[in-house]
Image (cartoon, each protein chain N blue to C red):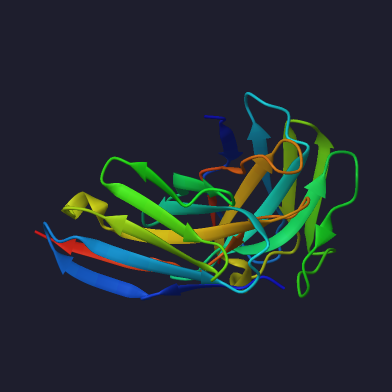
Length: 115
Length: 112
């Protein structure tokens, strides 16, 4: 199956700093990428959907100025958590899809801990 | 808005038992449904994908069924093993360029 990578896999940062997470589709062109957040023992909650070359569409309650998403190419999307706070500590998972109805492929996730 | 519910939230069974995990969804106009496995602190592993026109899919000891009209799916695990212990997530894809919508999952513990 298709491969989606995320980097870094784990990051610890101080409160107030910004953190960038990369999501890459390694063997296919991802026209659409999704960013999910998962708190401990909770399910995946969609944060935003991004189409290559377009602005991301954010879910209700997700601050677009805090969670900056860039999908500049068909193989790379980035999520930047700006001015991170301890409550942003979570597991962030990206997902990529080609076309409107193809399978979503998931990255391995990034564990963010904000001290 | 599509909502996905999984029952039970947690399940503990002795090794060797057959078990059923349940998933229900509110909007029956789905394109497909997927079952995932997630180990603690890890990403998702896709187990089975059922297209809306299909009734079931099988992979090894796993069998997933889909009753689209009633908005239900079940994941059947035969002869459970301790290695099956994980969280199992059900997710549905509606028509159009929409993302997967996930249930909260069922945490399964298989006791040796």
